[in-house]
Amino acid sequence: MLPACTIFIVGPTASGKSALSIALAEKIGGEIVNADAFQLYAGMNILTAKPAAAEMTRVPHHLYGVLPLTESCDAQRYHSLAVPMIEDIAARGRVPIVVGGSGLYLKALTHGLSPLPAASPALREHFKHLSAGEKIVWLLQRDPAAATSVNLRNPRYVERALEICLLAGRPQSGLRRSFAATEPQVNGVILDWNRETLYARINQRTLTMMETGLIAEVAALGELSPTAEKAIGIHEVREHLAGHVSLTDTIAAIQQATRRYAKRQITWFRRERCFQTICLDSVPTADYPLSRIFELFPCLRPSSQSVPSSST
Image: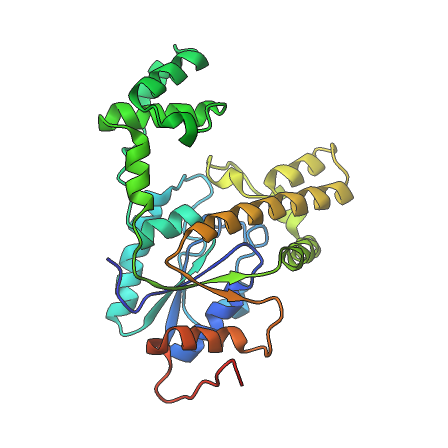
């Protein structure tokens, strides 16, 4: 269980999480802990929209650029990095502020690690000798509910579901349901925007990334781990560098991929009922999000400062 003082600021990409978290940290003596899967990596500052150096000097930031690009990461490894950091911040009398949009990494902190067994290389080697149909039959024999809970047209999903059934000795659908049904008590907010407004923010941020050196940054990247290479923009820019795609089309492709990612994030966070929602489509004042946080969580309100109500 995380320290009770921990607060989460989550939401889709380009929703303004970093700026709000810095403003909050300055008010309450907080330190920011990254929960973005790609901002963990060194060497992708522009690509991952990592907070600028000037912003990071305003308050302490943790777990930004701490992994080499050649290393893989998953929710379990992130959990092992983040929990000791959060506990240390709280032990020093500061407030841990977890910021990001990577749903599985955030869930590893709010719900704990999934009870699902880790991947088995031996089983996956065996799966290579089975046809797609045979794997589906095996899965449905062990977990009939998988017919509606697993995308049977996706071989990776089928293999993972079957693997869980075999390793756990019970239907994977039941394990997943019990884990998903957990409703932890945490302090946290989701930043929510009108879809068109958020997409406009994404489009503009992509242009800014291009203007500040995205092409050169991607060109300088060396070998990448299977995790790091999934960052949006790497494939698109490399296609441009290879002469296959124009710059205009590259920008459009990155914008589209980012919008699709944001849509998936929005869907994910709508299922996470442990967070409060702050709507930012038409806010009355620039400090509204901060004031709203203090209204939702009075325990965070600085004792020496009166924070105006958002209704005034």
